Amino acid sequence: MSILSQIGYSGVRAAQIALNTTGQNVANVNTPGYSRLSPQFRAVAGHGGTSIGGGVEISGIRRIYGDFQNQQLWRATTEQSYFSSRQQYLTALEGLAGSEGSNISAGLDNFFAALSEASSTPRSMGLRQQVLDEATQLAQRFNGLVGNIGTQLDALHGQRVAVVDEINGLTANISELNAQIIEMKAVGRDTSTLLDYRDNLIKELSQQADIRTQLMDDGSLSVSLANGQPLVVRATSAQMTVTRTASGEQNLALVFAGTTFRLGEATPIGGTLGALQDTEYGSLRPAQADLHDMAAALAEKVNAALVGGYDLNGNAGKPLFTYVPGSNDGLLRVTGIGADELAFSSAPGEVDNNDVLLQLLDIKNQNVTVGGTSIALNDAYAGLLGRVASASRQNQADLDTATTVAEQAQAQRDSLSAVSLDEEAIDLMAYTEAYQANMKVIGAGKQLFDALLALF
Image (cartoon, rainbow, N blue to C red):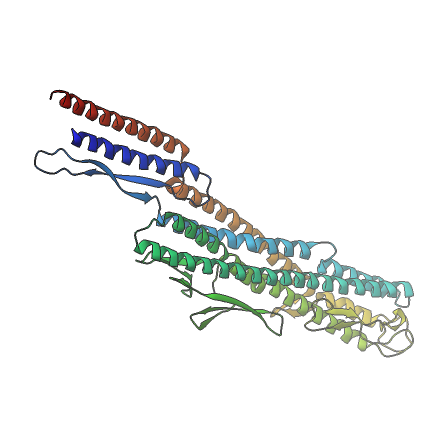
């Protein structure tokens, strides 16, 4: 009779543990990254040839976890974060370059239109002043656009510093969790909660950079960049650094165990950090360089024509524009000459001579070197605007695709590891019925034992 009671008691204990496990799952149904737990039942063997067994026991609590699903989710998160971070800068750049107040093509058209009007009456002070006004407006367009791109670069640099700080904090926390997991696993303690927390940190880290992970035998997780440079090895984490150069750029490096790895502009980093790198050197700085080339070429050609002519007073011509290399807020300036000092004539004293004006008008159709390509000024800006718009549209399409893939990866991970209240409700009823049935077994054993005692 004691064997029957022991079997019943084992069933009660197992059902109680299973009920507690279900309660833990239900309690964490809304906990991000929580992996549901599942009790593992095992029959207890009996002793002797006629024994029917010793009941049941919980051999362990299994954490429902899929490494493949998590790896897919982390990769998808990296892609989505990359395109999302890049899109905000591309959208802003496209808006700036295409806006009415910053459009260089519109400014060039207005400037050359003013020159065309003045060519019919070169002596007209009103038309000459209009040329100066349009030159000033054109310079302001160049300066405003380049200045706004510089503002974007400053914002990008600030974001890079913040992202690096975030990466350093995450890798430090992951290394600390590795140390705790190694210690707890060595003494047989439950590490499920720490593993979930670590997976959440890995997912956050995957937003910032493209990473690779490897599970070690001691339970720790090694983390590295996609190119193999280490971020976390057991309880040791790397330190990422950002330094500013004299030219205003930023150098990115990774320091691990006394070794420094340079992360140059060509290093594939991925995630938000990679998006910042690619946006700076693939979009913002090239656009800025093209605008400098255009401003320099415009100033050179216009000034060369004017210096070879004569103004209304018969004096030798003076330059109209000043180009300032390296400036991001005043790269093109009007020299401050008066309307009467515009040298439109090819001969002194001939106020109605428009030979130089015709030379100036011809500049519109002349090729200049922009970004290593020989092209007309208007075409150069149209090409810049087209590249930015094309990159923005393609990136948006990639972002839409990456978002869909990330949502699917999250759904696949949740279908395996997340808590389903419907499933937990079924388990709750099953374990409750098992608990009650085993209590009846214990009661039946007691009745049989009492009846046996009553025979004596």
